[in-house]
Picture (spheres, rainbow, N blue to C red):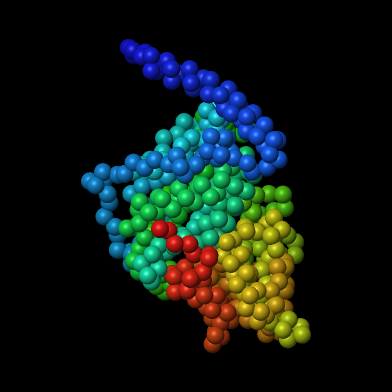
Length: 416
Ligand SMILES: *Cc1c(COP(=O)(O)O)cnc(C)c1O
């Protein structure tokens, strides 16, 4: 039998009426907006938890020293298998006025209602970014603002609550600080950051989730380039489609990835490392595995061109893609094009010996050179790694230098 205390009663009253209190607070802040004509007007008191949580409210509960795990050898790390000692959690409950206070806690399992929407309708989205220990020992994070923008776009598409990206970055930075010893000390390695947002309403209706959980976990990853297999061979099978117009292929939602696993397994069984995703009857080239794709070629006038498919709804707007486009545009050495190209275009470029390089781009490996494509029974040979001073390597070296602090650059922010 439970004894109901006054404190519990008071708590219950607040829980039951909190949404009303929040409504009053929101009405006030709307009036302020009207009075000042500011769209973004907000102060500490008026900060609306429906709009976002705040870094200021973050509390940290450190793991007991006996709970801390031993750190593995960097050389033995496999992607995503070992996690750090802490995690970040922020709940959203519409009934309680929206976002709750963020907490950093010891890494733990999540307990969910068996009807939680994420488990039935894949109401889930995630991000992937990295922090790096630089040559000066400082830890840097690469363009997190772009990941937060993208995460909010995914949240919108999934009908999940959005938040203030700046506040989230501050919380993530604090988490990295707490687990900073997990950022590997060897160059080429990094700490992978996985922010995730799930719909957790324990109700089976296919409807907007009124509660959500935003969490972030971290895992150290080894030196991608030390693993040997550098260039990749692809399977391009037009019978599979990753994304389509009006779909969600341009959002990092979990539901895009589960269905690719079997196709990837098929590719592996044929000795191909990745899938080249095609779209439409003309076999447009869209992405490679979970990377954006670039082709470097010589056009009919003899000019060099770097091309990548445009953000037409089928393409995930990669942070690395964006960085490569920005960087190479500044070089002013060749033409940059965001345009669609087909397998027929690739074959024509190969026949006329005008195809120089093809590579994938993504946070995991920066750039991944492509050496061959299996397409409709043929194995197309791509000469990416056969040039003396390949473009893919220059791009990789330049981004690498920024990430590991060899050169100071606004894209790599030091976590103090
Ligand atoms: C994450 C991802 C990318 C690469 O994005 P980055 O921000 O550069 O890591 C490309 N394509 C797909 C399908 C992805 O999921």
